Amino acid sequence: MKLYYSPKACSLADHIALQEAGAKFELERVNPATKRTASGRDFNDINPKGCVPVIEMDDGSLLTENVAILDWIAAQFPKLGVPGEMGRTRLIEALTFISTELHHSFRHLLDAKSEEEEAQAKAGIRIRFRWISGTFKGHYLFDDHPSVADFYLFVMLLWAERFDVNVPTRLTTFKELMRSRAAVSVALAVEAA
Ligand SMILES: N[C@@H](CCC(=O)N[C@@H](CS)C(=O)NCC(=O)O)C(=O)O
Image (cartoon, rainbow, N blue to C red; front, side, top):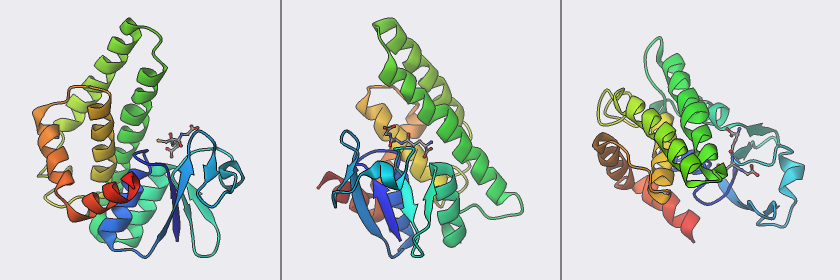
């Protein structure tokens, strides 16, 4: 299995998940500006949508879209999912919120053309972080064990730090807890190299 990623992009969630799972996988870096992969391929030939993450399965088939990839990883490695009859549904509910509400709202910030638009975008992001901070059921979103949704939320918090968006203390504590995990350190170090 191979994960196509760009450093500190949303694909970091999948990278952390695979490290946490102890999965056997390869990585290939994608330059988001040139759309070239580390081995020199045109990334658009791999994913015509032009976005990471992409997982290339051992049979050569490709899986795109972060929600689908994280759901697939949780299905392969149930310790990264959410237990119970409604567990998978609750996981998809959280992943969808993080993808469509949080991740997407950073686009508004990146596209902001004035200080006013930037302030509006940050306010929108803060509302969404505040909402999700009220849903924690333990040290992590669902209990005291992290799920793939926690890894995606962690990446959003790294973006918040980078773009100077204030978040509730609950989420800062969570971010530092995530940073203290061995798998997270490994993934961050690999992406920084
Ligand atoms: N719908 C995609 C969007 C993924 C996405 O936004 N990827 C960004 C990195 S975080 C990307 O590769 N952007 C490059 C581009 O849009 O040109 C998903 O949820 O997986």
